[in-house]
Length: 362
Image 1 (cartoon, helix red, strand yellow):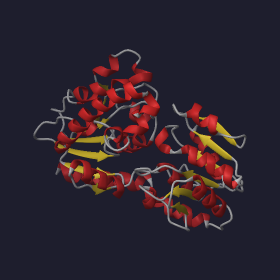
Image 2 (cartoon, one colour):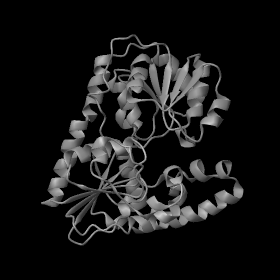
Image 3 (cartoon, helix red, strand yellow):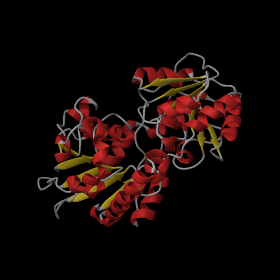
Image 4 (cartoon, rainbow, N blue to C red):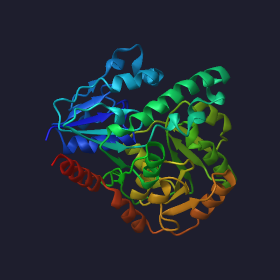
């Protein structure tokens, strides 16, 4: 079997890249294609495959501003040549699912999510509050065209695999396609419980972007009188810092070792936004720590109410503040929390995906 892997872009080790990493380890002779690759930004397992890039790689200041070339992505993704491959696996949250493959090859799309900003989260990325009225109006026209292209090319994948039942529902709604669910991997070997006693504190690990609703966590922790640590970077940092009081600490990007220490030393990890799946709650649970999450989206599939954390019915500071206070007084079973997280291990994901890929190539 000659396998090709396709990822939208490779500029850091986020959830999608951690999925790709496992597949690169399982299939070290696969071809790897991506629109943009920032060398050194991803793990050695991914770098070893020598990612082949599109013409966007050669455009000015692409390392920091590749998203500005979004209108060119459809043309770029369609120019890759897969004539030498029998199976193509695209890992798509933007346009990788729309590759053009030869007739004899099978195309499996592991869908992280249908394109958020083209469908149901336009305002969070490109609304008037973000860009101003004129630029937002122009971007709405661009995104409307991109959404039409996204729907029209949904038939290019022979099979869809979703990261959660929640995303499978979005695939059905926007693409009119069914999807198998294979949960993405969590590194339960690295993220493990430690012996130290957790502090009476809260943690957010997130990109600092509007749809994550981090301001809810900031206000909720003020209500609960609990110190909050925020790990992560993004364009929303300045706005969030203006909302934060003295009990909030912004760390920016942290190393994996630092992140593990944060999980194990924090009393509770917060997920105030609606996530398609959410790796962070499972990393925290792998460390034996409870989670307080908004009870919509993927959190309903990863957090067990009153066992591994609390699900909040509404994304308001008052509701989250009450849940944080309650969680910090509950006696959670660290071993039971850890056992739940182990169901999402890297080995489990690799086995399930390898079995599916081999079945499709038979």
